[in-house]
Image (cartoon, one colour):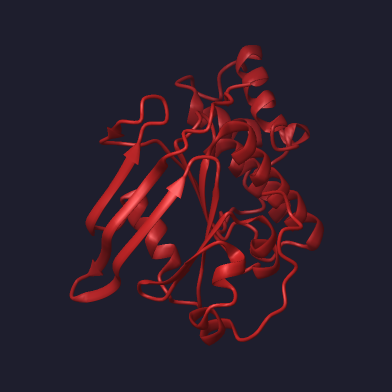
Length: 255
């Protein structure tokens, strides 16, 4: 397997300090301060248009930002100037008739060899092993456009974690997924953080699953309105102002 278990660092992996995003003169985010730790799932919640996806795009470098992003190396505890980021978007928008298979997509991204040449048994084994981490090895020869939403997301998770990133960003990747797909997704994410000490930031609207699986919840509306453990954030006034009153079963997932 390419992903290697590592000992939890016990320190923050990612720190956003006085983070802000502007598009022209329009301020989308301001004074965002977040600590994301190794081996933890940080879930960003908020109303539509609150800046959740904007935050991820700025971390990825797709939008200019003010403030700073720090990543602390898990091996020696030193702050590094750059970090490896894996990313899974909300949707791929693939044409169902496109001939690209899971193997073709994977091989084109991880190999310098043109995919139309003779297929490599060694490369196929690497791809199968990575897909197996996400219960998706049986999809290797399927066309990407013919996969269900849940199957596509498992393939994208496999891609996003090869090679192993320092930080995994997930932008509402389970939108519209059924209950079985949601359960499988959150189980896989929990396994990633536990076994591989991965820092994960997830944007999600699935509040019941968030209450069960998140280690930290960050409520955003242009800035951070509340942050902390789910049971703290979900009873806060900013949460009630945004989502109303909900009843949750905290702690029944795998944290």
